[in-house]
Length: 454
Image 1 (spheres, rainbow, N blue to C red):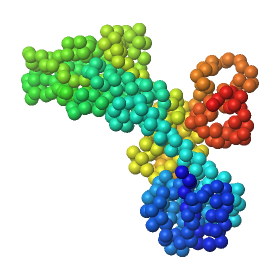
Image 2: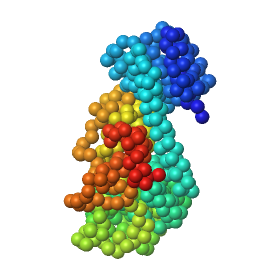
Image 3: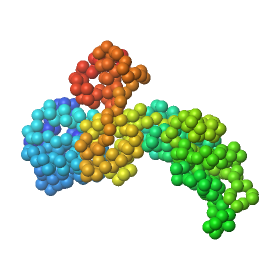
Image 4: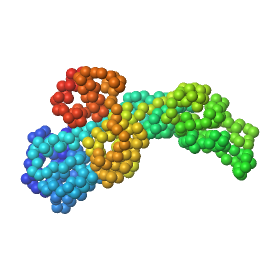
């Protein structure tokens, strides 16, 4: 499909010159107008991949037109063209979502290079989104249940597939992973994919459950069971009946409470405080922790028998630094969910996100993006808007080969590993990798061929 380009400028000579130059460069679908008031009707009739907009025009000026286009067609990349450089105008245009700006008179080479960069950025994002959606749908029988979990990473998709298979039964599930990787998001997805989907999903933080109150909180109590019990009160197990009880931070549960939880899992029933008749625990239990449970077992801080009961369906979510290709996908979803659908990332900002270590994982990414969108006033997010804490990400393992600290290697091997790491980190986009590495595109082609990368 041909790239559709819109050119808007009140100077007929400039419009004719740009249109002719674009067609000579192979862009056959060029729509050029000298009246900005004609653009709304064009947007109704056609989808444009890129728009070249003059800043100073009668009727609708370039900034008003930019805002209109971004509201009605957010995916259209806009390049501003101006005869007089004005820093405040340029900054405002970038904040409104313009990809770049050019000064008149512009050369055909400069115009085409800027246009290619804008289109390349769009192609990369679209490819990632399509790949993520396609792989997500292909891996799962019910992709809608897992729609909130955004990933195109093969390992993470396998975890989601295992989660879906376990969801069909009532077997307890243990989800592990670092803080912020999305354990509760996965637990909610399991609930939606399970026979319990019509029931409640009740999340409980184990840190907030005092050992002395475990039975009253989980089992509930009868009126008069203890001082202050002026009425019957259902516990978590009753409130989550026919649904899912999500036990977050289970590694922080006291040993005594762990024993009581184990009896629920083994016997499937419990006795409310002050009552003499046991009740069935008709609930699905999903537990999560960011701690190393086998290590806690070794130090006698976690019951071995409870771990055995939970680990039959064990799902471990990888940290964000091991699935960096998901970062652009997550960024788009998180910005839209936070009410910043018009915000976008500049190329340099994307590279900064890809190079960060993300110790706080997706939760950290969410906070960084929301704050950055505020600073960018809902427009284009630049690296200076990102408040990234800590250092850069550790080197990516090149083609699955781990690199040990202190290992001595020939210079060629170090270069190969670094080039492949950058290439993987930017989603195998050669042009973007060449810019990060600061080498020519043809040089990168030769090196990848030498490394037998196809």
